[in-house]
Image 1 (cartoon, helix red, strand yellow):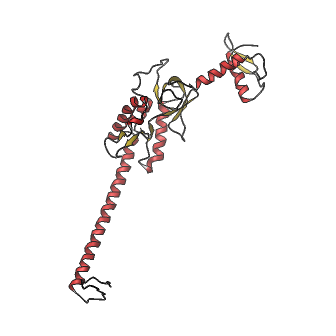
Image 2 (cartoon, rainbow, N blue to C red; image 1 turned 180 degrees about the vertical axis):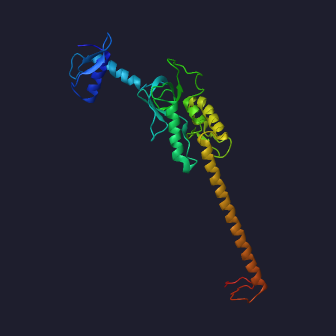
Image 3 (cartoon, one colour; image 1 turned 135 degrees about the vertical axis):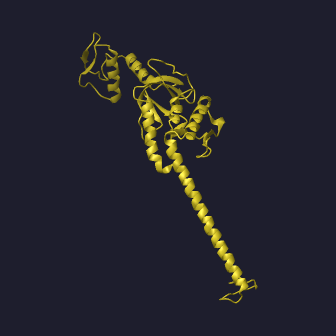
Length: 287
């Protein structure tokens, strides 16, 4: 039987699925074209333990365990439930220190979230080669910074940490800096994003954070992308709240003037109407 590597991979797939022999499968032939072979069952003695171990190692490598940085291909990019997540080869990756714009502008949040996902899908199409830099070295945490690669390159241009996908998405105005170690100092301020807890940042995050924050503040100041719509809503809400507060103050001031005028009238006209004045100061309903 052929020792073709595709056959070995198919054999592993059948074993993992708990299946046995099934329909023939076409695989590349050494001289071009295709050759037909039967998938190998878990009982097929021709598949050695070494081949199984090799195939398992390949699958594990595709998840990039214990790799602080690795090159891979975008396999998934369009999760509406977790918009900051992608899959590179078989590795789950969370775009660190960023989130879709929308929390500050409730009425537009759903629309802005959809636009944020669209921007991510456009920037990270399926099949795009990328460099992934984990946010916390020496761990298998999913949080990472991602860089686009041209052709067969293994190092992006410019080199990290400049122009990560995380930074470039924030620059679109549909994503914002995000994380418990960051703070949004004031939604309408020109400098809105800052590091709140610098000591909580990892060494890797410390390199990327200033670039992401700068992109966020530039986008907000220039009202790029969704920042314009979000700020318009924030400012309209703030103006409405200020107007309501001013109206309440005017109503209170009028009530106070009327009350004081009424007190003054009662004092100036004792005995007018019903009044139980306990101490003679003209104020009624006292014991």
